[in-house]
Structure formats: structure tokens, C-alpha cells
Length: 136
Image (tube, rainbow, N blue to C red; front, side, top):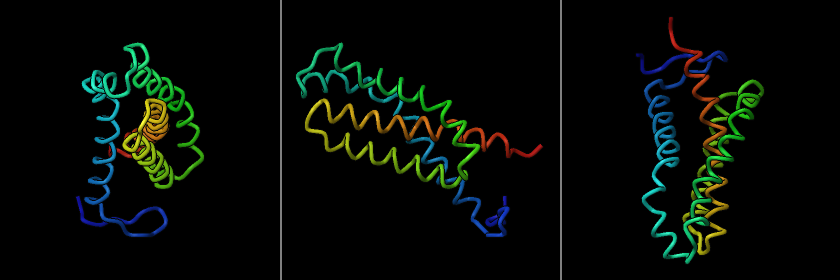
């Protein structure tokens, strides 16, 4: 792998930096889908909500993520990959900030749902782009 390559527009870019950025973004968003289970009892205690209510953090995330996956296929065809990646990571980051600052369960849920929009929009589009560009 060379340190720099040329894209379809003739612009050079650093391959190693590109791989590192995509790997960190992918790791953060995929980890975000799974790590919540251990925090649910704490959320129940802090926000004084029932088990059925706190489960909406996971259920809502998966529902929004599931809705975004087919939408991301359309986005992948109509939005440049770099722009789509940056927008979805920005949405994910905004959701993370909202969830981090949440003082109520409703705010936490809103942040979590915004995170799901970013994860669902990024996951399929970037994965399809990566697989479509593999050599061979």
C-alpha cells in the first residue's frame, strides 16, 4: 500500500490515513450498537424508569437503524461517498453529544435515535463502497 494515491478527480490522498479514519469511524459506530446493554440498569436507576421503558434505547436504535439501511442504499447511489461518510459521522457525533448531555430519559432517547440515523446511513453505504472497490 502506498502512502498516497490519486482519486478519480486527480487529487492525491493518503491511503493509510484514509484507512485509519474509516476504521475508527466503523469501530465507534458498530461498538455503539452493542455496548448499551451493560448500562441499562444504571439508566433505570438514574432516570427512574422501568425495564420496559429503558429497553426503548435499544429498540428505538434498532428500528431507526433498520429504516436507514434501505435509505442508505439510495444515498450511496446519489451522494458522493466522502460527503455521505462525513455527513453520517457528523449526525452520529451530534447524537452522541445530545446523549452525553442528557438530563432526562427523553433527551437520552432522542440522542440515541439520532445516533442510529448516522450509523444506519453510514454502515451500508461505506461497506458497499469498500466491497465494490476491492481488487480482484
